[in-house]
Image 1 (cartoon, one colour):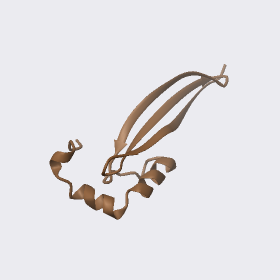
Image 2 (cartoon, rainbow, N blue to C red):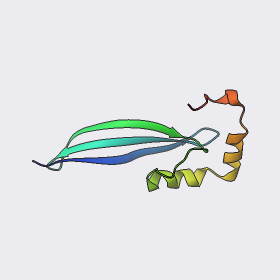
Image 3 (cartoon, rainbow, N blue to C red):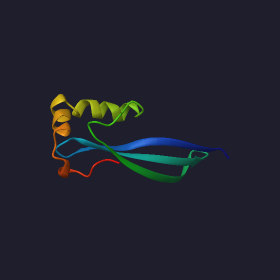
Length: 86
């Protein structure tokens, strides 16, 4: 009767003009290899986000889509175009 917990990044999506990266993180609990439960957490990364602590699959997507042009567009966007991060 061994319980185990694992983390999966099962959805990584790129959306919008500024290439925001939406991530879905799944926490999976298994017992003897059978899945008991799965819960989700979602978050969004923007071109000025610190991705140094993100898993490799997430940072690879960010690095691929956040070109210098995208980063510059993000920095120079009108502040009313998106809700400011807190």
